[in-house]
Image 1 (cartoon, rainbow, N blue to C red):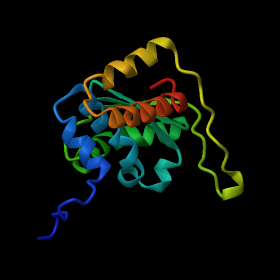
Image 2 (image 1 turned 90 degrees about the vertical axis):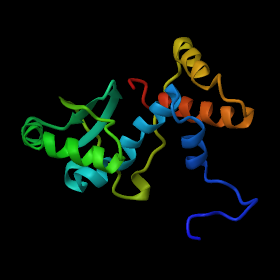
Image 3 (image 1 turned 45 degrees about the horizontal axis):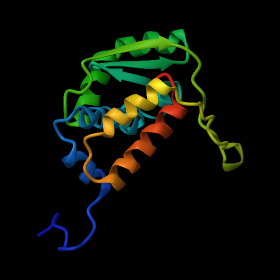
Image 4 (image 1 turned 180 degrees about the vertical axis):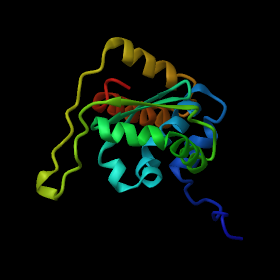
Length: 160
């Protein structure tokens, strides 16, 4: 009986969110966010240090690349990366990859170098959009948690 949880045991939040919002706009957005979780696994550590997914919108994944030589190499690998990403995601979430030149911050090498990320204020329009995304959630505690996660994400990544 592997895979079944004992009656009364807590359900994993990831599974709860995925099943509860499957087929909704919020569910689709949550699936899109998986790209950030699997990026390094798909591209490997060398490429991951020089790239960063910026946004996924309408199936178009925009990736920030640290320089022209890497951008050229990644353009040669585009179809392979596209296939590997969708295979890892288990769905055709990414339809196209666009590479954009820019500064990619290297990950901190040690605990001493780790700093808190800069948090940007949320615009009233973004706050309203987040409210709309969680408005159909029946469980107020779950809605509050999702809202907090979304607010934190957009305060860290205001351009997404």
